[in-house]
Every structure is written in C-alpha cells, then in structure tokens.
Amino acid sequence: MSKDTLSVTDNRTGKQYELKIENGCIRAMDLRQMKTDAEDFGIMAYDPAFQNTANTKSAITFIDGDKGILEYRGYPIDQLAEKSTHLETSYLLMNGELPTKAQLHEFTDKITHHTYVHENIKSFMDGFRYDAHPMSMLASTVAALSSFYPEAKQVRNKEVRRHQMTRLIAKMPTLAAFSYRHSQGLPYIYPNNDLPYAENFLTMVKSIGKPNWKAHPALVKALDVLFILHADHEQNCSTTSVRVVGSSEADPYSAVAAGITALYGPLHGGANEAVLRMLREIGDKKNVPEFIKKVKDKDGDKKLMGFGHRVYKNYDPRAKVIKKACDEVFEVTGKNPLLDIAVELERIALQDDYFVQRKLYPNVDFYSGLIYEAMGFPVDFFTCLFAIPRTVGWVCQYEEMINDNEQKIARPRQVFTGQRKRDYVAIDKR
Ligand code: CMC
Image (cartoon, rainbow, N blue to C red; front, top):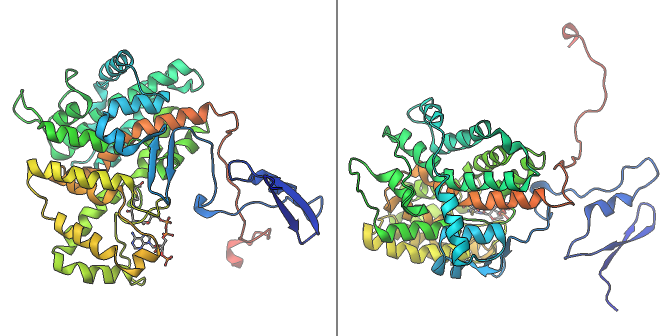
C-alpha cells in the first residue's frame, strides 16, 4: 500500500528515518534529526538559488511550468487578459475573489483617491542627476515613502497594512511617470482622477502642452492587458526579495523597494530592456543565424535575452498573449521594424537543438519591449512598466507572508568553506 512518506537510510550511521511527504515536499527541518553523533548539527539541504526549495505555501498564483499554465486565484491568465482590467485583477489578487460591481467601484475609488504623492517627492526627484535611470529613481522614491507614512511600521495591523497596499498600487504609476518626466527634463503632470488607471498613467507620461491630450484607446487597452500579465508571478526573484525583507517586519514600502531593485536586473524584469538592445545590436534579419551561433558559443557572454525561464519549460503563456497584443498596437503605431528580427529569432531558436534540448522558449519579456517601444517609451523606462503592475503582486505576497504562522524571519544557512580559527599576525610579520 502506498504511503506519503520517504524512507531514508543514513549510511554513515545505518539509521533509518521516515520523512513525511506533504504537497510533494519533505520538510527540510526533518533532515536535522539525521546526525552522526549528539554533537553533529544534523543534515541540511544545500540549494543555491532555491532551485528546488519551496519557501512558502501560497494561494495566490499557480504556475505549471511544463504545461505553460498561469492562473491568478484559479483564473487562467488568458481569460483575465481578454476580459478583465488591471484594477479588477488587482482586487482578485488581493481578496481571492472577483469583485461585485459595488466592490469594484469602491476599490477603484480608493485607488484613484490615493494617486497623488506628497509635494516633497518632487524635490526628492529633482535631486537625481538629469540622466538617472528611472528604475533607480523609482526604487529610491518608493523606499522614501516609508518616511512619509511612519504608521506603515504597524505591519500586523490589517487596516493600516491594507491602507499602505492601496497607496502603493495607487502611487506607483505617479512615481514612475515622475521619474520618466525627470529623465526627459519635462514638467511633472499630476494625476487626473477622472481617468482609469492605465490611461491616467499614460497621460502623466505623455501629455505635453495640450491640456486635453487623450491617449489612444487601443494603446490604453494594450497597456492594461500588459499590466494584467505582469501583476503576479509567484515566488520569483523580486517577490522573494519582498518576502525576505518583509520577514524582518520592515514596512511594505521598504519591502517593495527591495522588490524593485531585484526586478531591475537584466535576468529578471530588466530583460525587456535587454531584449530591445539585443534586437538593435542584431540590426537585421539576415544577422540572426550569426547571433544565434554566438549565443550557443558558451565562451562568449551572449544570451538570447527574453528566452528561457526557471519555471516555464514550455511557451510562457504571457508571451502568447503579448504576441497577439503586438498586432493590435502596431495597427495604431505602425509596425516596429524590430519585430521581423524578433520573429526570425524565435523561428530559428525554436528549431535549434540547443534551445529545444534546454526547453528554452520566449518569455514575457521577449515581445513586451517591442510594444513599449512602439508606444514611444524609451528603453530604460521599460522595467518601470513592469514594476507598476507587479506592485499588486508584491503587496499581496507581503501580506500573505505576514499572515502565515509558519513564517519567521528569513535566514538561510550556509556551507562554510573558508579558513577556520588562526592566530592574528602583526602587519610587519606578514
Ligand atoms: N540564452 C542562451 N542560453 C540560455 C538562456 C538564454 N536566454 N537561458 C538559459 N540558457 C541555457 C543556460 O546556459 C544553461 O545551459 P547549460 O545547461 O549548457 O549550462 C541552460 O540553458 C539552463 O539555464 P540556467 O541558466 O540554468 O536556467 P535558470 O533557471 O538559472 O535561468 C533565466 C533562468 C531566466 C535567468 C535564464 O533563462 C536567462 O538568463 N534568460 C535570459 C534573461 C531573461 O529573459 N530573463 C527574463 C525572465 S522572464 C521575466 C521575469 O519573470 O523576470
């Protein structure tokens, strides 16, 4: 008869152990009973980069990387992208259920009325160099928000915590837009609370000299779809950073600032920026085979940016939706000339043994940059466009961590490989 346990023999001692298997996992702490003698610390699990370690239980986002499935609270991503809005999806992520009309109205109202930032934030922004990267500005200003709302320290008070979650979702587009305006040397545009979330953001970024400037509805829709696709992605690098920082009971602003800095890296959210730079470097469809050759040459430092994923070993379901959104955006903006290079890269890579064997498929960042560029965003602003929608994911994961009785301050172990105790040598004797 099958049993949900794992039998282990420690060949150092001959002792046998039976470890419980729950949700396909053994508890790493169960290994600690396996000792060679009473002094022994016990066995630990060594897992650089958490490749096979579940750090938490979570009920927010489900991914099946082999089948290419992504669901928020059980709803498939393609259905949400087609039928929902970013704020409705945010409500779903935060509360576990889709809202009624009244609940959505109340939630939208709350978010809309927290879009303004303290006037001092503008002077704070002005302190940055003219060419500061917008992600550096965003991370710093979000961290600074913690000083504007000292009550945020009451992380275990649900009402206070929810208030900060609302503020973060509401203010992130304003802060991102301000960082854009600063980097372009343009005056800041205040939020217009008559406009929906994505449109309000586009207006704060784009409008110049025309008080009645109106974003194209197709572009607003496409941006909102991109926001939905980026809203959460379970325990990725930035979300784990948010959880780890939050586990010390740091306030949500400080934790989310850590998420933004983690997202900045080119292996994570910074990949959308890296993809565009890569496509420009390739320059022409005819250069694609040569570029693929360089990627496969491991001595070089080239990667096919926007390809591969720690979890997806199949086509990233978000990339499928984005590919479709590309057509709708290009109908308005005209085709991004880099699209042909991207399509050719994908075609060749998906037939090449190197990529097939390693199960490397396009991820969310492969096509998103093409849309952002077609919409007229500069390349170094792309990752901010990822950070805005991911904010809801970060705050939901933060709250789930705070409410999880099994969680404690995050504190991994190490395998020490350095020198052990030795006597100090005076400088003239070295
Ligand atoms: N181009 C070329 N080879 C690759 C790539 C790539 N983009 N990605 C992985 N590989 C190779 C890698 O060299 C390794 O080969 P080998 O087995 O011969 O050593 C094999 O595939 C397995 O890769 P890995 O580095 O062990 O995989 P990982 O899970 O540690 O890394 C990744 C995942 C996303 C960091 C990596 O695929 C990558 O660097 N991709 C490019 C950057 C990128 O597009 N990042 C965005 C990720 S999706 C958005 C997000 O959530 O952040």
